Amino acid sequence: MKVLVVEDERLVRELLVEKLRDAGFDVLEAANGAEAIASFQSQNPDVLLTDIRLPGGCDGWDLAERCRSAKPDIPVIYSTGYSETRPAWCPEPSC
Image 1 (cartoon, one colour):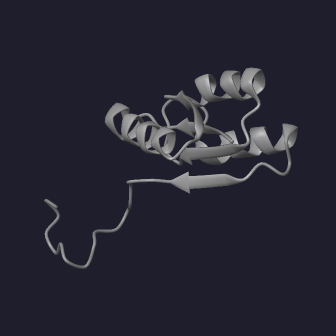
Image 2: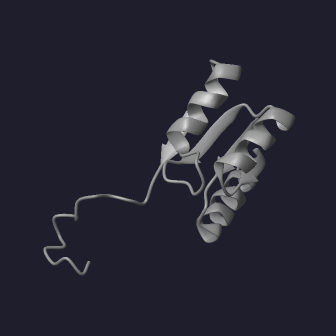
């Protein structure tokens, strides 16, 4: 199974790619939406794992829509490390 991992944070992307490869997946990687679209078109992945917040004009939501327009049944896994709200354990704005 071929997984396209799209993550702009290099260390996070490398960790995801390493763990997926260790689990036996064929992994493609991209750092932004433009790279991901090019990889999707040329490599035809089976699964898309994308960060929601990506640099450039194409975020994870847009990317998934574009991929699904070409391949409607592709499973999409969304991830993000961003939140507009602070966790309950962090009452200070500095967290």
